[in-house]
Length: 340
Image (cartoon, rainbow, N blue to C red; front, top):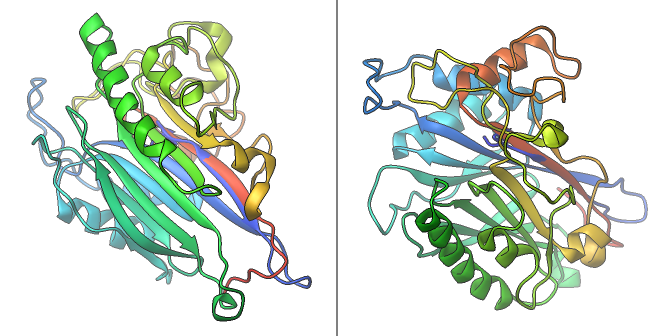
């Protein structure tokens, strides 16, 4: 989960009646690294990697997401394994997932949305056809037991991306073309929707056209909550927000090594999420690259000690993926919305 595994956790909240408390909504994005079977094209013979769902379970138990979007999932059975062995465990039964949709351009790496059905309802899902991989579009709304009376709720739209990797001019052009197509979809969404563009954008710097298409173009204004532009790769000034790689060496699953020195994973949101318009508001300083304590530049996250995260979670993140998950938090603030 680019939590960044790479994933970020975004926590939001909604308030219900005057008596109700603010309700948090946690968003996690994660690149799950060829889940669940791994790959052999890097020379590794370790195809069926054991216990990957169990490793992911430790991370999910720590993060407790309400919205979890993952990429690099190989099979529908892999999605079911995430749902039933990493999320709905130890008596938890409220997680559901979206439908499995094969990528329009082939390949075995798909996206998936998992969500807390006690808080949210998945209204519909769509795709934005981009090469080499589609962008998944999920439309959810808050589960509000006053909806029959008030005819109002809070819509959350999540776009899960896994953009073209690489640093060549052709790779940059491909990413720009992908986000230009996404930009046209974003600008066509109804006013007031809370938009989240998540995933592995494979960006090296904020000046890339593919990134600028999201944060500066179009009529639907998107913002990076971290607001830290620059050349992110191999730059110690951005140590605290790097999401790849939590491993320095020794990968057995075709994952990238070299230590934490890239910011490839993102959660970018619409302006109304940041300013709290229309019920939902970002919790300041809740955007984290989970597992990155800011003290492991160009190192494995297992090197030395970690000042912010439990040892068991750090070890799970190391073995789960070559990315860290991103997490953000929000809260729902409403005069009438309640969570049943």
